[in-house]
Image 1 (cartoon, rainbow, N blue to C red):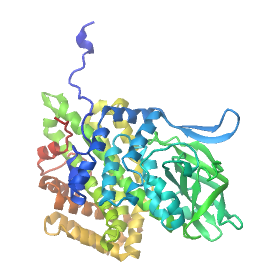
Image 2 (tube, rainbow, N blue to C red):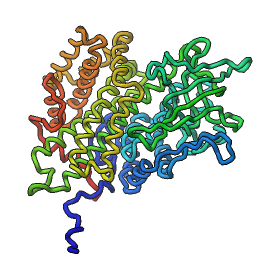
Image 3 (cartoon, rainbow, N blue to C red):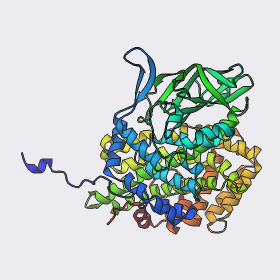
Image 4 (cartoon, helix red, strand yellow):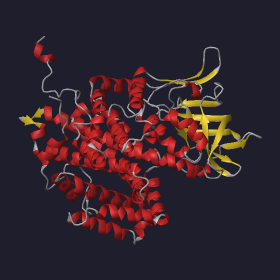
Length: 545
Protein backbone atom coordinates (compact mmCIF):
# COMPACT_ATOMS: atom_id res chain seq x y z
CA UNK A 1 0.00 0.00 0.00
CA UNK A 2 1.19 3.50 -0.80
CA UNK A 3 2.28 5.03 2.53
CA UNK A 4 0.77 8.34 1.49
CA UNK A 5 -2.73 6.86 1.77
CA UNK A 6 -2.46 6.68 5.53
CA UNK A 7 -0.44 9.83 6.00
CA UNK A 8 -2.33 12.49 7.95
CA UNK A 9 -1.41 16.00 6.89
CA UNK A 10 -2.90 19.44 7.37
CA UNK A 11 -4.41 18.40 10.70
CA UNK A 12 -4.60 20.75 13.66
CA UNK A 13 -2.62 19.42 16.65
CA UNK A 14 -4.48 18.83 19.92
CA UNK A 15 -4.88 21.93 22.02
CA UNK A 16 -2.69 20.93 24.97
CA UNK A 17 0.29 22.42 26.75
CA UNK A 18 -1.20 25.92 27.03
CA UNK A 19 -2.01 27.71 30.27
CA UNK A 20 -5.80 28.03 30.38
CA UNK A 21 -5.55 31.09 32.63
CA UNK A 22 -2.64 33.12 31.31
CA UNK A 23 -3.40 32.48 27.63
CA UNK A 24 -6.88 34.01 28.07
CA UNK A 25 -6.44 37.76 27.98
CA UNK A 26 -10.10 38.51 28.67
CA UNK A 27 -9.85 36.47 31.88
CA UNK A 28 -6.47 37.75 33.04
CA UNK A 29 -7.47 41.37 32.55
CA UNK A 30 -10.72 40.81 34.47
CA UNK A 31 -8.87 39.15 37.36
CA UNK A 32 -6.39 42.01 37.62
CA UNK A 33 -9.18 44.56 37.27
CA UNK A 34 -11.33 43.12 40.05
CA UNK A 35 -8.53 41.50 42.02
CA UNK A 36 -4.80 41.92 41.65
CA UNK A 37 -1.71 40.75 39.80
CA UNK A 38 -0.81 38.48 42.73
CA UNK A 39 -4.23 36.86 42.44
CA UNK A 40 -3.46 36.05 38.82
CA UNK A 41 -0.07 34.65 39.76
CA UNK A 42 -1.79 32.41 42.30
CA UNK A 43 -3.95 30.90 39.53
CA UNK A 44 -1.07 30.12 37.19
CA UNK A 45 -0.52 26.58 38.51
CA UNK A 46 -4.21 25.76 38.10
CA UNK A 47 -4.18 27.13 34.55
CA UNK A 48 -1.12 25.10 33.61
CA UNK A 49 -2.63 21.86 34.91
CA UNK A 50 -5.95 22.56 33.18
CA UNK A 51 -4.16 22.79 29.85
CA UNK A 52 -2.33 19.47 30.07
CA UNK A 53 -3.00 16.46 27.89
CA UNK A 54 -3.55 14.51 31.12
CA UNK A 55 -6.41 16.77 32.20
CA UNK A 56 -7.96 16.58 28.75
CA UNK A 57 -7.84 12.76 28.83
CA UNK A 58 -9.37 12.59 32.30
CA UNK A 59 -12.18 14.84 31.09
CA UNK A 60 -12.82 12.49 28.19
CA UNK A 61 -12.75 9.34 30.29
CA UNK A 62 -15.12 10.77 32.91
CA UNK A 63 -17.71 11.18 30.15
CA UNK A 64 -17.07 7.87 28.42
CA UNK A 65 -17.54 5.90 31.66
CA UNK A 66 -20.80 7.11 33.14
CA UNK A 67 -21.77 6.88 36.82
CA UNK A 68 -23.36 3.57 37.81
CA UNK A 69 -25.97 3.09 40.51
CA UNK A 70 -25.83 0.04 42.77
CA UNK A 71 -28.98 -0.19 44.88
CA UNK A 72 -28.17 -3.44 46.71
CA UNK A 73 -24.94 -5.14 47.67
CA UNK A 74 -24.27 -8.83 47.08
CA UNK A 75 -26.02 -9.76 50.33
CA UNK A 76 -29.22 -7.91 49.52
CA UNK A 77 -28.55 -4.94 51.75
CA UNK A 78 -29.81 -1.62 50.39
CA UNK A 79 -26.78 0.63 49.85
CA UNK A 80 -27.76 3.18 47.14
CA UNK A 81 -24.24 3.94 46.02
CA UNK A 82 -23.18 5.56 42.77
CA UNK A 83 -19.78 4.59 41.42
CA UNK A 84 -17.62 6.96 39.39
CA UNK A 85 -14.67 6.37 37.08
CA UNK A 86 -11.23 7.20 38.58
CA UNK A 87 -11.00 10.17 36.19
CA UNK A 88 -13.97 11.76 37.94
CA UNK A 89 -12.15 11.53 41.25
CA UNK A 90 -8.97 12.90 39.65
CA UNK A 91 -10.89 15.99 38.49
CA UNK A 92 -12.73 16.41 41.78
CA UNK A 93 -9.57 16.08 43.86
CA UNK A 94 -7.93 18.92 41.97
CA UNK A 95 -11.01 21.13 41.93
CA UNK A 96 -11.37 20.87 45.70
CA UNK A 97 -7.60 21.13 46.18
CA UNK A 98 -7.47 24.36 44.20
CA UNK A 99 -10.06 25.88 46.57
CA UNK A 100 -12.95 25.94 44.09
CA UNK A 101 -15.55 24.58 46.53
CA UNK A 102 -16.46 26.60 49.64
CA UNK A 103 -12.99 27.84 50.59
CA UNK A 104 -13.67 31.55 49.81
CA UNK A 105 -16.26 31.82 52.58
CA UNK A 106 -13.64 31.23 55.28
CA UNK A 107 -10.75 33.02 53.59
CA UNK A 108 -9.28 36.24 54.94
CA UNK A 109 -7.53 36.93 51.63
CA UNK A 110 -8.84 39.84 49.57
CA UNK A 111 -10.87 39.08 46.43
CA UNK A 112 -11.37 35.44 47.47
CA UNK A 113 -14.52 35.05 45.38
CA UNK A 114 -12.91 36.55 42.28
CA UNK A 115 -10.06 34.11 42.66
CA UNK A 116 -12.42 31.20 43.08
CA UNK A 117 -14.59 32.35 40.14
CA UNK A 118 -11.62 32.64 37.80
CA UNK A 119 -10.36 29.24 38.93
CA UNK A 120 -13.80 27.67 38.46
CA UNK A 121 -14.04 29.25 34.99
CA UNK A 122 -10.64 27.89 33.97
CA UNK A 123 -10.80 24.46 35.61
CA UNK A 124 -14.29 23.76 34.24
CA UNK A 125 -12.76 23.80 30.77
CA UNK A 126 -11.17 20.44 31.57
CA UNK A 127 -14.62 18.87 31.98
CA UNK A 128 -17.84 20.64 32.92
CA UNK A 129 -19.85 17.93 34.70
CA UNK A 130 -17.84 17.76 37.90
CA UNK A 131 -18.41 21.47 38.38
CA UNK A 132 -21.92 20.66 39.66
CA UNK A 133 -20.98 19.19 43.07
CA UNK A 134 -18.23 21.80 43.39
CA UNK A 135 -20.79 24.55 42.76
CA UNK A 136 -23.37 23.19 45.21
CA UNK A 137 -20.73 22.90 47.91
CA UNK A 138 -19.74 26.53 47.35
CA UNK A 139 -23.38 27.60 47.41
CA UNK A 140 -24.42 25.76 50.57
CA UNK A 141 -22.42 27.94 52.94
CA UNK A 142 -24.40 31.22 52.61
CA UNK A 143 -27.66 29.31 53.13
CA UNK A 144 -26.29 27.73 56.31
CA UNK A 145 -25.72 31.14 57.88
CA UNK A 146 -29.36 31.30 58.94
CA UNK A 147 -28.49 28.74 61.66
CA UNK A 148 -25.16 29.56 63.38
CA UNK A 149 -24.98 26.15 65.06
CA UNK A 150 -25.36 24.16 61.85
CA UNK A 151 -23.05 26.58 60.06
CA UNK A 152 -20.37 26.02 62.68
CA UNK A 153 -20.69 22.25 62.28
CA UNK A 154 -20.58 22.11 58.49
CA UNK A 155 -18.78 25.16 57.09
CA UNK A 156 -15.21 24.12 58.01
CA UNK A 157 -15.72 20.75 56.32
CA UNK A 158 -17.37 22.27 53.23
CA UNK A 159 -14.54 24.80 52.97
CA UNK A 160 -11.84 22.14 53.17
CA UNK A 161 -9.37 21.78 50.32
CA UNK A 162 -9.16 18.01 50.88
CA UNK A 163 -11.27 15.75 48.69
CA UNK A 164 -12.46 12.86 50.84
CA UNK A 165 -15.02 10.74 48.94
CA UNK A 166 -17.06 7.93 50.42
CA UNK A 167 -20.08 7.53 52.69
CA UNK A 168 -18.85 7.93 56.26
CA UNK A 169 -19.83 9.95 59.31
CA UNK A 170 -19.10 13.61 58.49
CA UNK A 171 -17.06 14.17 61.65
CA UNK A 172 -14.62 11.46 60.52
CA UNK A 173 -13.92 13.09 57.16
CA UNK A 174 -11.31 15.67 56.14
CA UNK A 175 -13.76 17.42 53.86
CA UNK A 176 -17.36 17.10 52.70
CA UNK A 177 -19.47 18.05 49.68
CA UNK A 178 -23.03 19.40 49.52
CA UNK A 179 -26.02 18.97 47.24
CA UNK A 180 -29.51 20.38 46.86
CA UNK A 181 -32.99 18.89 46.39
CA UNK A 182 -35.76 21.30 45.48
CA UNK A 183 -37.91 20.08 42.58
CA UNK A 184 -40.52 17.32 42.49
CA UNK A 185 -42.42 15.48 39.77
CA UNK A 186 -45.59 17.51 39.93
CA UNK A 187 -44.12 21.00 40.23
CA UNK A 188 -40.63 21.42 38.81
CA UNK A 189 -39.61 25.03 39.36
CA UNK A 190 -42.91 25.66 41.17
CA UNK A 191 -41.47 24.45 44.46
CA UNK A 192 -44.43 25.74 46.47
CA UNK A 193 -46.35 22.85 44.91
CA UNK A 194 -44.02 20.37 46.65
CA UNK A 195 -45.73 17.50 48.45
CA UNK A 196 -42.79 16.02 50.42
CA UNK A 197 -43.78 16.20 54.09
CA UNK A 198 -41.58 16.95 57.12
CA UNK A 199 -42.87 15.48 60.38
CA UNK A 200 -41.48 16.80 63.67
CA UNK A 201 -39.92 14.23 65.97
CA UNK A 202 -41.30 14.70 69.47
CA UNK A 203 -39.04 16.46 71.99
CA UNK A 204 -36.00 16.49 69.69
CA UNK A 205 -36.28 19.44 67.33
CA UNK A 206 -35.54 17.08 64.46
CA UNK A 207 -37.80 15.94 61.62
CA UNK A 208 -38.37 12.97 59.35
CA UNK A 209 -39.01 13.48 55.63
CA UNK A 210 -41.52 11.51 53.58
CA UNK A 211 -41.72 12.03 49.82
CA UNK A 212 -39.39 12.40 46.88
CA UNK A 213 -37.14 14.67 44.84
CA UNK A 214 -37.24 14.48 41.08
CA UNK A 215 -33.82 15.91 40.25
CA UNK A 216 -30.91 15.81 42.69
CA UNK A 217 -27.36 15.78 41.38
CA UNK A 218 -24.32 14.20 43.02
CA UNK A 219 -26.10 11.73 45.35
CA UNK A 220 -22.77 10.64 46.85
CA UNK A 221 -22.29 14.08 48.38
CA UNK A 222 -22.35 14.22 52.16
CA UNK A 223 -25.19 16.63 52.92
CA UNK A 224 -28.18 18.08 51.07
CA UNK A 225 -30.38 21.12 51.50
CA UNK A 226 -33.95 20.00 50.80
CA UNK A 227 -37.38 21.65 50.71
CA UNK A 228 -40.35 19.96 52.40
CA UNK A 229 -43.76 20.88 53.77
CA UNK A 230 -43.55 21.27 57.56
CA UNK A 231 -46.56 22.10 59.73
CA UNK A 232 -45.71 25.78 59.32
CA UNK A 233 -45.32 25.65 55.54
CA UNK A 234 -42.55 25.03 53.02
CA UNK A 235 -39.28 24.77 54.94
CA UNK A 236 -35.61 24.13 54.24
CA UNK A 237 -33.95 21.11 55.82
CA UNK A 238 -30.42 19.80 56.13
CA UNK A 239 -30.22 16.11 55.24
CA UNK A 240 -26.94 14.24 55.83
CA UNK A 241 -26.23 11.17 53.72
CA UNK A 242 -24.69 9.48 56.78
CA UNK A 243 -25.91 10.11 60.33
CA UNK A 244 -23.52 11.30 63.07
CA UNK A 245 -23.54 7.74 64.42
CA UNK A 246 -22.09 6.43 61.18
CA UNK A 247 -25.36 4.77 60.18
CA UNK A 248 -26.64 5.63 56.70
CA UNK A 249 -29.65 7.90 56.54
CA UNK A 250 -32.84 6.47 55.06
CA UNK A 251 -32.47 7.92 51.56
CA UNK A 252 -33.20 5.82 48.47
CA UNK A 253 -31.63 6.59 45.08
CA UNK A 254 -34.31 5.45 42.64
CA UNK A 255 -32.40 5.86 39.39
CA UNK A 256 -29.74 7.90 37.62
CA UNK A 257 -31.15 10.24 34.98
CA UNK A 258 -30.24 9.53 31.36
CA UNK A 259 -29.40 13.11 30.38
CA UNK A 260 -28.57 14.80 27.09
CA UNK A 261 -25.24 16.03 28.46
CA UNK A 262 -23.50 16.44 31.82
CA UNK A 263 -23.15 12.68 31.72
CA UNK A 264 -20.09 12.44 33.97
CA UNK A 265 -22.23 13.80 36.81
CA UNK A 266 -24.90 11.62 38.39
CA UNK A 267 -28.31 13.29 38.58
CA UNK A 268 -30.81 11.15 40.43
CA UNK A 269 -34.34 10.71 41.70
CA UNK A 270 -34.55 10.33 45.48
CA UNK A 271 -37.21 8.94 47.78
CA UNK A 272 -37.56 9.72 51.49
CA UNK A 273 -39.33 7.47 53.98
CA UNK A 274 -38.44 8.48 57.49
CA UNK A 275 -35.30 10.32 56.39
CA UNK A 276 -33.74 12.18 59.33
CA UNK A 277 -33.41 15.94 58.81
CA UNK A 278 -32.61 19.12 60.71
CA UNK A 279 -34.55 22.30 60.11
CA UNK A 280 -32.59 25.15 58.53
CA UNK A 281 -34.32 28.43 59.20
CA UNK A 282 -37.89 28.98 60.34
CA UNK A 283 -40.82 26.89 59.22
CA UNK A 284 -42.52 28.44 56.23
CA UNK A 285 -39.37 30.31 55.18
CA UNK A 286 -37.84 27.56 53.07
CA UNK A 287 -37.76 29.38 49.75
CA UNK A 288 -36.13 32.46 51.25
CA UNK A 289 -33.56 30.28 53.03
CA UNK A 290 -32.56 28.18 50.04
CA UNK A 291 -32.53 31.18 47.67
CA UNK A 292 -29.19 32.11 49.21
CA UNK A 293 -27.90 28.83 47.80
CA UNK A 294 -29.66 29.39 44.48
CA UNK A 295 -28.05 32.82 44.08
CA UNK A 296 -24.58 31.31 44.42
CA UNK A 297 -25.32 28.43 42.04
CA UNK A 298 -26.69 30.92 39.51
CA UNK A 299 -23.34 32.69 39.59
CA UNK A 300 -21.72 29.38 38.76
CA UNK A 301 -24.19 28.82 35.93
CA UNK A 302 -22.95 32.07 34.40
CA UNK A 303 -19.33 31.11 35.04
CA UNK A 304 -19.90 27.62 33.67
CA UNK A 305 -21.53 28.88 30.48
CA UNK A 306 -18.80 31.47 30.00
CA UNK A 307 -16.28 28.67 30.52
CA UNK A 308 -17.97 26.56 27.82
CA UNK A 309 -17.83 29.54 25.48
CA UNK A 310 -14.15 30.04 26.11
CA UNK A 311 -13.28 26.36 25.66
CA UNK A 312 -15.26 26.22 22.41
CA UNK A 313 -13.66 29.44 21.18
CA UNK A 314 -10.17 28.22 22.09
CA UNK A 315 -10.71 25.00 20.12
CA UNK A 316 -12.09 26.86 17.11
CA UNK A 317 -9.43 29.57 17.00
CA UNK A 318 -6.68 26.98 17.52
CA UNK A 319 -8.05 24.84 14.69
CA UNK A 320 -8.28 27.62 12.12
CA UNK A 321 -4.77 28.80 13.04
CA UNK A 322 -3.37 25.38 12.07
CA UNK A 323 -5.63 24.26 9.23
CA UNK A 324 -5.33 25.35 5.59
CA UNK A 325 -7.90 25.27 2.81
CA UNK A 326 -8.17 26.76 -0.66
CA UNK A 327 -4.57 27.89 -0.66
CA UNK A 328 -4.11 29.52 2.75
CA UNK A 329 -4.71 29.16 6.48
CA UNK A 330 -8.33 29.31 7.56
CA UNK A 331 -7.34 32.01 10.05
CA UNK A 332 -6.28 34.21 7.14
CA UNK A 333 -9.65 34.00 5.38
CA UNK A 334 -11.59 37.23 5.95
CA UNK A 335 -14.91 35.46 6.48
CA UNK A 336 -13.43 33.01 9.00
CA UNK A 337 -11.76 35.94 10.75
CA UNK A 338 -15.20 37.50 11.05
CA UNK A 339 -16.66 34.35 12.59
CA UNK A 340 -13.83 33.84 15.09
CA UNK A 341 -13.77 37.52 16.03
CA UNK A 342 -17.52 37.51 16.60
CA UNK A 343 -17.26 34.41 18.77
CA UNK A 344 -14.43 36.09 20.68
CA UNK A 345 -16.53 39.17 21.35
CA UNK A 346 -19.33 36.98 22.70
CA UNK A 347 -16.92 35.08 24.92
CA UNK A 348 -15.21 38.19 26.25
CA UNK A 349 -18.53 39.84 27.09
CA UNK A 350 -19.61 36.75 29.04
CA UNK A 351 -16.27 36.53 30.85
CA UNK A 352 -16.27 40.20 31.81
CA UNK A 353 -19.78 40.00 33.23
CA UNK A 354 -19.16 36.74 35.11
CA UNK A 355 -16.05 38.03 36.90
CA UNK A 356 -17.80 41.32 37.65
CA UNK A 357 -20.54 39.36 39.40
CA UNK A 358 -17.95 37.50 41.47
CA UNK A 359 -16.49 40.85 42.50
CA UNK A 360 -19.95 41.84 43.71
CA UNK A 361 -19.88 38.85 46.07
CA UNK A 362 -16.55 40.02 47.46
CA UNK A 363 -18.05 43.48 47.92
CA UNK A 364 -21.40 42.36 49.34
CA UNK A 365 -21.06 44.69 52.34
CA UNK A 366 -21.34 47.63 49.93
CA UNK A 367 -25.03 48.44 49.28
CA UNK A 368 -24.36 49.10 45.59
CA UNK A 369 -22.61 45.77 45.13
CA UNK A 370 -25.35 43.88 46.96
CA UNK A 371 -28.10 45.55 44.92
CA UNK A 372 -26.20 45.03 41.67
CA UNK A 373 -25.74 41.34 42.47
CA UNK A 374 -29.48 41.02 43.09
CA UNK A 375 -30.46 42.29 39.64
CA UNK A 376 -27.41 41.26 37.61
CA UNK A 377 -27.43 37.59 38.60
CA UNK A 378 -30.80 36.74 36.99
CA UNK A 379 -29.96 39.04 34.06
CA UNK A 380 -26.68 37.28 33.41
CA UNK A 381 -28.10 33.83 34.12
CA UNK A 382 -30.83 34.45 31.54
CA UNK A 383 -28.67 36.05 28.86
CA UNK A 384 -25.28 34.35 28.99
CA UNK A 385 -26.68 30.85 29.47
CA UNK A 386 -29.28 31.38 26.75
CA UNK A 387 -26.65 32.43 24.20
CA UNK A 388 -24.21 29.62 24.92
CA UNK A 389 -25.74 26.88 22.70
CA UNK A 390 -25.68 29.14 19.63
CA UNK A 391 -22.12 30.18 20.30
CA UNK A 392 -20.86 26.63 20.89
CA UNK A 393 -22.63 25.37 17.76
CA UNK A 394 -20.90 28.01 15.64
CA UNK A 395 -17.52 27.19 17.17
CA UNK A 396 -18.12 23.49 16.44
CA UNK A 397 -18.83 24.34 12.81
CA UNK A 398 -15.44 26.03 12.51
CA UNK A 399 -13.91 22.56 12.76
CA UNK A 400 -16.12 21.30 9.95
CA UNK A 401 -16.96 17.59 10.01
CA UNK A 402 -14.14 17.01 12.49
CA UNK A 403 -16.05 19.08 15.01
CA UNK A 404 -19.06 16.80 14.73
CA UNK A 405 -16.98 13.78 15.75
CA UNK A 406 -16.77 12.85 19.43
CA UNK A 407 -12.97 12.68 19.42
CA UNK A 408 -12.77 16.43 18.86
CA UNK A 409 -14.45 17.10 22.21
CA UNK A 410 -16.84 19.58 20.60
CA UNK A 411 -19.98 17.39 20.76
CA UNK A 412 -19.51 17.12 24.53
CA UNK A 413 -19.45 20.92 24.78
CA UNK A 414 -22.53 21.21 22.57
CA UNK A 415 -24.54 18.71 24.64
CA UNK A 416 -23.54 20.58 27.78
CA UNK A 417 -24.37 24.01 26.37
CA UNK A 418 -28.16 24.14 27.10
CA UNK A 419 -27.77 22.89 30.66
CA UNK A 420 -27.07 26.05 32.64
CA UNK A 421 -30.05 27.79 31.07
CA UNK A 422 -32.28 25.08 32.55
CA UNK A 423 -30.74 24.46 35.98
CA UNK A 424 -31.30 26.90 38.84
CA UNK A 425 -34.33 28.37 37.10
CA UNK A 426 -35.02 28.25 33.38
CA UNK A 427 -34.95 31.29 31.13
CA UNK A 428 -38.51 32.27 31.98
CA UNK A 429 -37.94 31.87 35.71
CA UNK A 430 -34.92 34.17 35.63
CA UNK A 431 -36.56 36.74 33.38
CA UNK A 432 -39.50 36.88 35.78
CA UNK A 433 -37.07 37.17 38.69
CA UNK A 434 -35.73 40.32 37.02
CA UNK A 435 -39.26 41.77 37.07
CA UNK A 436 -39.64 40.72 40.69
CA UNK A 437 -36.43 42.50 41.67
CA UNK A 438 -37.44 45.63 39.79
CA UNK A 439 -40.86 45.78 41.45
CA UNK A 440 -39.86 44.85 45.00
CA UNK A 441 -36.33 46.16 45.31
CA UNK A 442 -36.01 49.54 43.56
CA UNK A 443 -32.41 49.84 44.73
CA UNK A 444 -31.53 47.04 42.28
CA UNK A 445 -32.65 49.15 39.32
CA UNK A 446 -30.68 52.09 40.63
CA UNK A 447 -27.61 49.86 40.95
CA UNK A 448 -27.98 48.81 37.30
CA UNK A 449 -28.39 52.44 36.19
CA UNK A 450 -25.33 53.44 38.20
CA UNK A 451 -23.23 50.59 36.83
CA UNK A 452 -24.05 51.12 33.15
CA UNK A 453 -23.80 54.87 33.74
CA UNK A 454 -20.08 54.53 34.45
CA UNK A 455 -19.60 54.22 30.68
CA UNK A 456 -21.97 57.08 29.79
CA UNK A 457 -20.55 59.34 27.10
CA UNK A 458 -17.92 56.88 25.85
CA UNK A 459 -20.03 55.27 23.11
CA UNK A 460 -23.19 56.76 21.63
CA UNK A 461 -24.55 53.34 20.69
CA UNK A 462 -24.35 52.17 24.28
CA UNK A 463 -25.90 55.41 25.55
CA UNK A 464 -28.80 54.97 23.12
CA UNK A 465 -29.27 51.32 24.09
CA UNK A 466 -29.42 52.22 27.79
CA UNK A 467 -31.98 54.94 27.10
CA UNK A 468 -34.08 52.55 24.99
CA UNK A 469 -33.91 49.92 27.75
CA UNK A 470 -35.06 52.40 30.37
CA UNK A 471 -37.96 53.27 28.09
CA UNK A 472 -39.00 49.62 28.09
CA UNK A 473 -39.53 49.82 31.82
CA UNK A 474 -42.42 52.19 31.27
CA UNK A 475 -44.03 50.09 28.55
CA UNK A 476 -45.84 46.78 28.52
CA UNK A 477 -42.49 45.03 28.19
CA UNK A 478 -42.01 45.46 31.93
CA UNK A 479 -44.93 43.04 32.35
CA UNK A 480 -44.61 39.30 32.10
CA UNK A 481 -44.89 38.91 28.31
CA UNK A 482 -41.99 41.29 27.77
CA UNK A 483 -39.74 39.96 30.52
CA UNK A 484 -37.30 38.21 28.19
CA UNK A 485 -36.81 41.24 25.97
CA UNK A 486 -36.23 43.47 28.97
CA UNK A 487 -33.83 41.04 30.65
CA UNK A 488 -31.85 40.58 27.44
CA UNK A 489 -31.61 44.31 26.82
CA UNK A 490 -30.47 45.02 30.38
CA UNK A 491 -27.86 42.25 30.24
CA UNK A 492 -26.47 43.40 26.88
CA UNK A 493 -26.16 46.96 28.18
CA UNK A 494 -24.33 45.72 31.26
CA UNK A 495 -21.92 43.74 29.10
CA UNK A 496 -21.47 46.71 26.77
CA UNK A 497 -20.66 49.04 29.65
CA UNK A 498 -17.94 46.68 30.91
CA UNK A 499 -16.38 46.30 27.47
CA UNK A 500 -16.51 50.03 26.69
CA UNK A 501 -14.78 50.77 29.97
CA UNK A 502 -12.20 48.00 30.05
CA UNK A 503 -11.79 46.01 26.81
CA UNK A 504 -9.61 46.95 23.84
CA UNK A 505 -11.30 49.49 21.61
CA UNK A 506 -11.77 47.01 18.77
CA UNK A 507 -13.61 44.55 21.04
CA UNK A 508 -15.90 47.21 22.49
CA UNK A 509 -16.60 48.63 19.03
CA UNK A 510 -17.48 45.21 17.64
CA UNK A 511 -19.83 44.51 20.54
CA UNK A 512 -21.63 47.83 20.44
CA UNK A 513 -21.99 47.85 16.65
CA UNK A 514 -23.40 44.31 16.54
CA UNK A 515 -25.25 43.61 19.81
CA UNK A 516 -26.86 46.92 20.68
CA UNK A 517 -29.82 47.99 18.64
CA UNK A 518 -32.91 46.53 16.99
CA UNK A 519 -31.07 45.31 13.87
CA UNK A 520 -29.03 42.55 15.54
CA UNK A 521 -29.74 39.23 13.81
CA UNK A 522 -27.89 36.98 16.25
CA UNK A 523 -25.92 35.09 13.59
CA UNK A 524 -22.17 34.98 14.15
CA UNK A 525 -19.74 36.24 11.53
CA UNK A 526 -21.63 39.39 10.53
CA UNK A 527 -19.42 42.08 12.08
CA UNK A 528 -19.29 45.16 9.86
CA UNK A 529 -16.70 47.47 11.33
CA UNK A 530 -14.05 45.87 13.45
CA UNK A 531 -10.35 45.15 13.52
CA UNK A 532 -10.92 41.45 13.01
CA UNK A 533 -7.28 40.39 12.93
CA UNK A 534 -6.48 41.97 16.30
CA UNK A 535 -9.48 40.34 17.94
CA UNK A 536 -8.57 36.92 16.51
CA UNK A 537 -4.95 37.25 17.62
CA UNK A 538 -6.07 38.33 21.09
CA UNK A 539 -8.22 35.26 21.59
CA UNK A 540 -6.15 32.43 20.06
CA UNK A 541 -4.39 30.31 22.72
CA UNK A 542 -0.60 30.35 22.71
CA UNK A 543 1.86 27.79 24.00
CA UNK A 544 4.62 28.77 26.42
CA UNK A 545 7.98 29.37 24.76
